Amino acid sequence: MQANCLAIVKKLTCKNKCPLLVILFFMTMAHHVFAQEQRSITGRITDATTQQPVPGVSVSLKGSGIGTASAGDGTFTLKIPAGKDPVLTFSSLGYASREIALTADNQVNVSLQPSSSTLSDVVVWDTAPRNVPALPAR
Image (tube, rainbow, N blue to C red; front, side, top):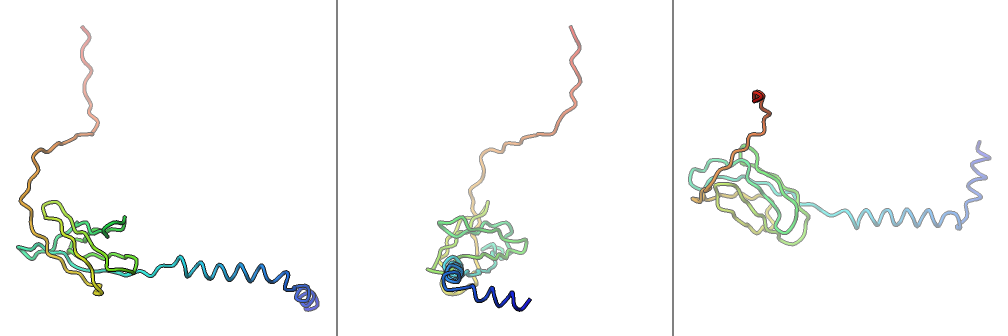
């Protein structure tokens, strides 16, 4: 067994090792290039008038598809790529939307102003199957 291993090791020359080393080098470099540092932003969203938490607020990174929604207690956590100071957008039905530019702080507490705009029409769809009796033949 040891003789076979030594024979294999002796056969490995630079010609055979170099492609393997090059592949390992590029795999290591690709990990560093493609792995972006992420920043975790947390906070709490409250109603500006009542100071009560606001659940279901859409929290998104402006100009990207990254987003989340606030929990029942108004808290949220959003992971965004590290880099320049980004802008977060907060929006919810019944409240005025708000944009906040982030600084180095990873904690953002937001108060949303209730909006007085109302919906003009409400449409209700009923998609449940119905058992309608057949019409009598004439």
